[in-house]
Structure formats: C-alpha cells, structure tokens
Image (cartoon, rainbow, N blue to C red; front, side, top):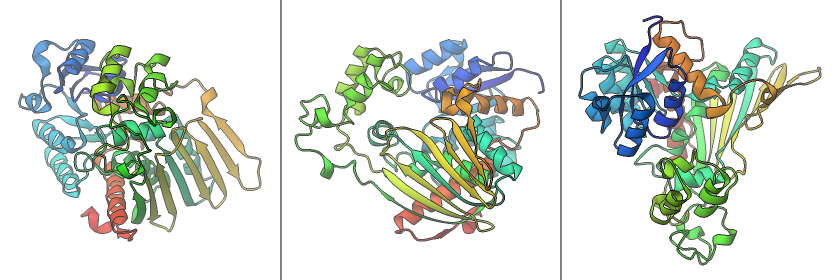
Length: 428
C-alpha cells in the first residue's frame, strides 16, 4: 500500500492511545488517519473521536465491540490494559489487521508463544511500543557502539530512575500497582530497558539473576498520624513527599497549580481543572495514602544478565530518585561511554584520547514523548505499513519477545531468592 494513507483503528484511548500515539498521528494526516476508536470510558472515547473526526458509528464502547465488526482499517493500535493486550491483538490479527501494541505484550509465557503463532499463521505484522530504541539518545549510543570505537562490549550498567512521585502515581496508587491485575513491575516498567540493553549489546541473553522487593510502600512504614487519605486530616502531611496534594496540585513538575495539565494530571481527569483534580484526590484512588494502598509490586529491583559471548549487563530499577530518566555506562575493550537521558548528554571516552561530549539538548530535536521516541516510533510504523524497508530499530514481535523472556526470568529469579534462570528453555 505504498503511498496510500494508512487507516488506523485504536483500541484503548487513554494516556497512550489518545495522548501519545493518537496525537502523533494527528501530525501525520498526510500519511495516516484514525478511522475508528474504542474505549470503555465515554468521555475519553468522545474526546478521541472528536480529535480525529471519527464518525459516531465508528466509535465503540469497548475493544471487543470494535473487534466484533468486520475489519475497519489497515492496522490496529492495541493500547488497552496489560492483560488485555494479547486477547485483543490476537483477535485483530485473525481479522486481518496488522497490529502495533503497547508494551508489555503479556506477563504470561504462553501468551508470547500464542501471539507469535497467530501472527505467523495469518501473515500479519506486529510491532511493540518499545519507544526508547527510537530516541535520539539511544540511537546515538547504538551508532557509537556499532562504529567499533569502544571495541568489544564487556559490560553495561543501566539505571532506571523511576522517580518518587511516578512510583506513587503508577505503581502504588495507580493501574500498575498489583501484579495479578497487570504485570510484574520489572516487565511493566522496564521491558523498555531490557529491550534496549539486548539491542545495544547485539547478543541474546543466556541467563538471568535478580533481587528486589516491596520495601517501603506498605502499612508497617506508615508514619505516626498518617490518615487513610491525604485529605482526611493526615498529621504526617507536611513532611510527606508522597502527599497527593503536593504531587497533583503544587509540585512544579506535575501540579495543576503550576500549569501542568498533561500526564500525570490527565490520568485523574480529562480536561483537568483544579476543581476536578481536588475532587479526584478526595474521592478516587490517587488520593490514598501510599502506605495504605493495596499495592504489591516491587519498589526496587536489580537484574543481572549474562549474554552470549560473555558480556555482563545489569539493570537497577529504583523508585527512590528525585530525577527521572535513564543513566547508562557502556564499557568496551577500547573505550567507555556514559549517558544521562534526563540531561540528554553522552560522554565517549576512547582510551588514550580526549573524551568527546555530545550534548543532544543543544540540537534541534523534539524530545517530547519518551525523549522523542513516540514520534519516531509512529513514523517507522507508518513507513512499515506503506511498504518501506524498516531499519534495525523497529521492534517487531520477534525482537520484542526477547526482552520479555528476560523480564519473566528476572521475576522468577527474584521470587526464588536470586536463583540463576536459563533463558533457552523459555524460547520454545
């Protein structure tokens, strides 16, 4: 379908489907058009439908309702909740859609095997939203490694700075707080990181070990005088950085009183206002005390990976950081590289030479949406749909499954006190 406008249906028009990928598609009207949308929330459905000019008869109250219809588009974006991804994607593949699906694919090994089988049997393509690969930051690191200036890669150390308020928002109070409802946190939050580590190294992982736990966000750590809700006379409020009113009202990065109306504020209310956010804090899940929620996912974890050829990789994920983003150290036989995604700075140190510093922040690049990754992902997906030859970045299903195997092995190892887990038997 080279040159034709790609028709796209979106299942799930929440934070990612409507506000990330949907907005990027609005900027690509000459190449792609959203022709159908589905969501269980009527307000989100109306907003997404209006934004894309989708007629009422192509607005569906659920992904299932949309998938009950004959094929409506060339491709479907599956942006529903974690454990819905594979059922919705499999149904779409069988209808003849190509699929782009939000990560993670699934926390179940059998789901990974099923969707791979269905995609192959139906001759359809699946792309997974590992957006970090597409960022200028990681693209620069990959090009540096592939150039050979660092020699053979021996070790990589990566740190996922979850950020204290992000942990509270998504993994203590929010949708990803309970593993049985979504995924282990190392998969939900860090399959991005495990994907780019495997990609940078250019080798498959042989075995994994991991440690981590839910150490802090539990009832036993509640300060004296803590209330069940932040707005119910909490006596620990003044000294608590996790106070909901601080995060959603007055925090300079996230608070609506400081001008923020995007994520995470728009998760609490569509078209947010101070009144709506205050009401959400007083009555909804995002106003609960972080020490009195029903969360069970970890707040810190370390993953150690042994790769083919002997290189060792490690990832540390921690909630307890003041600044978000990723930091990375790559060590090779001829040099090393250090990078800070928050600052968009990379330092390349070839042994015996003066270091080179690349300041991506000074370049004319758009770093909105996962460091610019959202836009580049959508561009490559549309390229693929229009018949253009993809480069080595695009995260096909076969590519993405590798990071999921590492994540599932890491969670198994964590639950087994750091036991080393072999990856090969999981590949099937």
